[in-house]
Image (cartoon, rainbow, N blue to C red; front, side, top):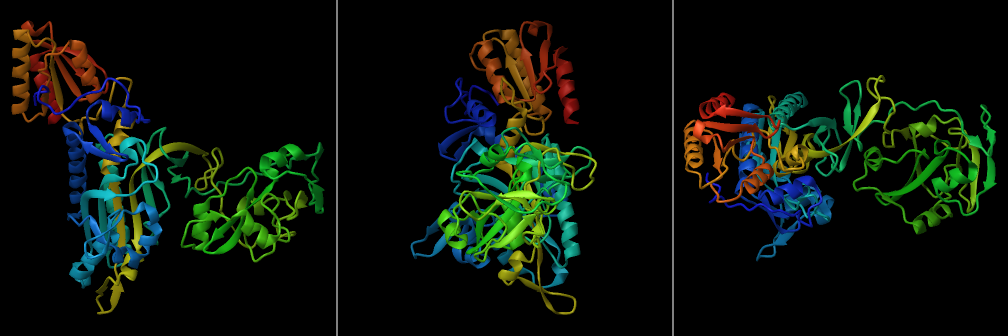
Length: 578
């Protein structure tokens, strides 16, 4: 490809709307262009990278035994209503009507569509298992599109779906997809971790893992052990062992080791944990924090230590709530327990409020809590004595530095990550509600046991760009670079340089290498600047040594430069391809 005819323009200035390195460099390098918020055109350079990612994904999906399909992006609303996701997705779902006033949605994922397809095609266990996949555009009306391709409203995704006759069969299908994902991300040169995660809007009855690209701009927090392989998304991470801490000082005196009697103290205007720790001179870990949520129309109080945060996903899953939890409105709290926000506590809590105690609270010998009376708190609150702690569990976020919940030897360390893939064990979540059944060996009808497996291909492109970005541009891994070799004659007017550059480009092309020849009439500085932005793995500069038949050979990722003969450069590249 001659760069003079390439449909691409590099930008000198950082676009004002771009706030992530990948977004900035993909725009500046001429890979993408924004059409609307969260909606992008892939320029030829970006499309080439995207296509290489697609081919890696296809190769590994096919290797794992999956078969490619292509399903409609337009989904009948009644399918999503039948599964319950029409409501669950809420405003994130693009909705529309046809001329006959029939409702449709632009597919966010395709569980309902593929389940209906298999339901109509397979009726016997003899044709199971089967795994189908597609690479297709998905649509989600993000409230706040940001970071370019990392959170857009239109995204390219590979979604796969497995159908098995048994849970044991699902385990096999799930493992095959998990291992395929590991191979895909390794081939793409991604620095990633597979972490335990929550099923979210997809749902399911079994395990689920997210594949996270490690990045400082990631919107997800990963808790990973420093010793073993345990890693989980923060919303799923198990809280580590509770440290046996000394009781904190109250008003300058050490608390007694024996449980003290309840003591009500006046705390005028003290509503928050910060205010209470300052007022009493105690550590936040000595406080029992009471947060009241609304869940499926009822109220539930969640008790955590003052230095911990409630994990709403864990609470929702424990309750089996159909909708996300929301903090109860002050009016609802006042109506239920007769006290405004800030003074609620577990002792004598009334108003049909269900109480869930985090394990760390249940292990406290004594604590401080709201007195359910304006401007008063209680000292000496003993879990199990002063309030029931029968509904006890892990309801908080794990904390960095605490013991690993699996091996107990390592400590939890936090990282930021970008979700690029997710694998789910769905079980009968969709086959049940959609009536998708098969006849087993005994002729009995049973629901398919399903799994689903997604990779955000456009997000993967951006995540790789984010990880490989430097001060000059993107340093693409060789497997997905838009071209394999960038040949740059320093001076277009120099006959010797142009002749050698043309010969090199032709020889490499005949060998099957993808070559971009910078034949533009530009200054050398402009060419090198653009080459850094574009980030092709190998750069061959044809300059002052052209008459000697020598070129400067540079690898973009390592920065290593060598003066080689043209023949040696060709042999080096040919060796990389073999």
